[in-house]
Image (cartoon, rainbow over all chains, first blue to last red; front, side, top):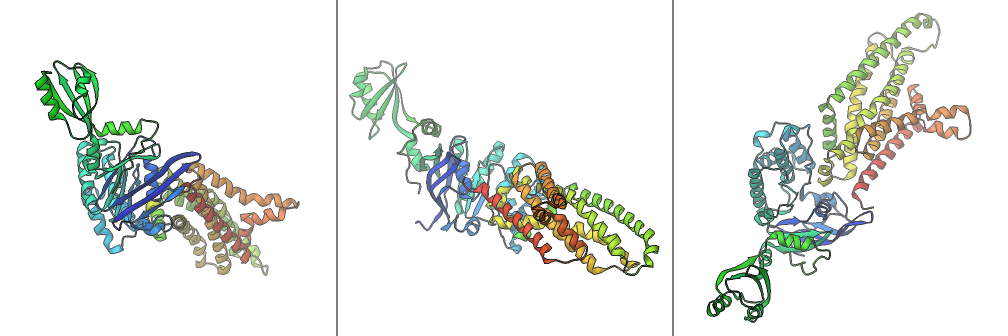
Length: 318
Length: 250
């Protein structure tokens, strides 16, 4: 196993009664990675995260945190973890300072470092002026920040955030994303979200889970490659017959989209130059020639809206 | 780590007006009972003075006061224990403890000790009243200690049973009602025993009242102490099991 591996999850299963919420999920997280966890509601994101943090025991499979088995040795494995659940676990009757101090003690931060740790976490989450306020009186966004502060307080090597930007305003979302990117440099981070651009903005790796199974796992670069679909969209003033276009070198398939618009599927080299050349010489009257780019949303919907999960998608996550 | 959780639990009780009002109400009622008992004793004292081996102030004031205290605490204890675990569930704060490097045993014992610390405060305030008699009367300190031990063990048992009931539900009120029911049942279970039918011995043994009464009389029987020890141990183990069951697949 990779020595840099912070999380090594293998064949995780979780049943609720007869219902299988998570099926054979395996992945790996290394230092410096920000892993975005996507999936529709009820796909098993939160269940997986709860298993990674020891809040739920898996029905089968194993989790290792920095090489320590979470099931055999939960106490030392959990010291490496910071977790923000979907609903931040806040005691409303404590002040921010009291709460964070308690969390530091729970995470066995040595007594003389507690104050420093609390200050640092507050600073990172923009909570300095709120230290003496009761958590119950803070706005939702600030409560969320306290939740994040709690997760990074003890400087864990892995930070797991379940929908960290829910309920925040756009400015706070930007700040939290910046914080996540910053944290991602020295820690390993797993975050789940519904907001797709958030993944492209903050993560280095993406995983999509659907009906308890991983249907897509790749790095952001790999995802970019997926986004460049092998398609060109062309519009001609005098459209030629379809088989004429199909006969062009490199074109695998032609799909008419109406209003003189065609989608050309190609394989191998991008044939845009050849298409343009032919269009000019044969007088088709080329109006548009655009490489089609799929959005993450399309991939997401493609992967999660079909009944049979794609098998080709379990790419290398490292 | 147990200490951290216990301290948090103890402080949390005092963050709400609940703990303060319970302390105040219990103290008020107990003071009234104490003074009433003292009054009765004052009326009896001249007549008792002539009799050799007559019951003293400890038997006539301290023991009945402690006996009454037990019943009042039985009413009060579920109110203190009801929210200990159920509230954490309801507010979803349990995951903070579950993802921290602490075991379930540490969590449960920490919570238990926190509640126990509160009961100890209650007990100290109660015992101040009989101790005030030391100024003008001779107390049998052995019997006083026996009663105090009985009351502490009883409160330990109340706390353990209440904690278990609190682990069963998300609703603090449900936890309070069910732990009150359980405690009351265990208190009066020996009423069936007095009819002398078969199996009544077992019921009498199960009764919390019986074991408390003998300690109150100043009889230290290790069987009574063992009863409470087992009671507390059983309910703590059940609580840990119950809390772990949420985590484990089923």
